[in-house]
Length: 154
Image (cartoon, rainbow, N blue to C red; front, side, top):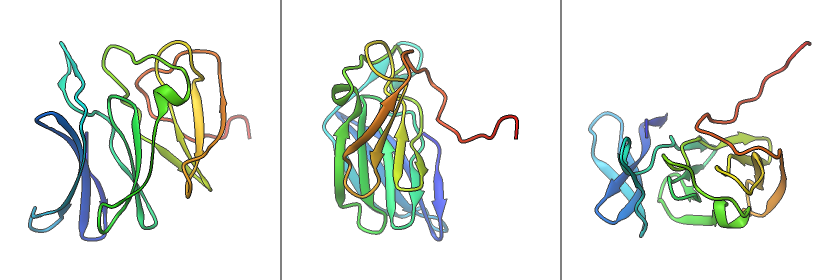
């Protein structure tokens, strides 16, 4: 996971023992501000253990999806969980070799994510405030790229 920076705080994901963690640090000192831990671990022979996706910071929230498919919406200042959903279970999808790697995309009132593997939709949107599933679509398994917004042909 890379870092997402907002103001004087930076956010990333780490594997700490048996827990996948979203961690907030002070930008200038590197001091830890808070840790949110999920009691899960994902490992692959090529990528090793741990989460891969970079958290997304929007307004006063941090959206982070771990390699096992747990999508968390956290308060950016305290790390308190606002809502959480397992995007693989919620969409009937199976994980792929290197785990869920795509970072969440905040698009208006939605958080768009990629449930990986076969059996589920390619893209799914959750309500940014409640975590309720809004829509899903696409018949093909997603891979490791994060969703992006583009305008094609005008």
